[in-house]
Length: 181
Image (cartoon, rainbow, N blue to C red; front, side, top):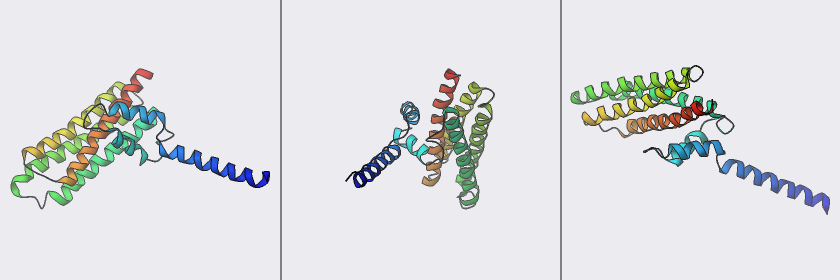
């Protein structure tokens, strides 16, 4: 009886622990996302989903989460810029081109701002915090350029939304790094 009951109990315990470990983000991510969600348009759900899709985030410390977030911002900004240049600019009506060109400039600036923040993590966390905020401003400026040019491109808007999300998350994390170190 004991030899058959023990493996069943052990298996049930392992399955329960696995379910608990995958169903809820670690406390650090929860805390960061709760604070980031205080800044619209960031939501707790979007923040948690950001980390859930990134390998290594569940076990990362503050600096590791900052690196994950900033690298995501760099990659998204560069990808969005390529998307505009390769797919939209050539096919855009003449009147929309200035807005799209302005947006690509702002996307390039966002990639540089996220990149600067990533470099500054080791040297000057206050500058990293500033650069991460500027990346969000750059994304919002791209959005404003599109609106001014009356350009509506949902796929690009989603990408710009992610840049704002990454900026808000990076702001929270770098702020914590400033106060903890």
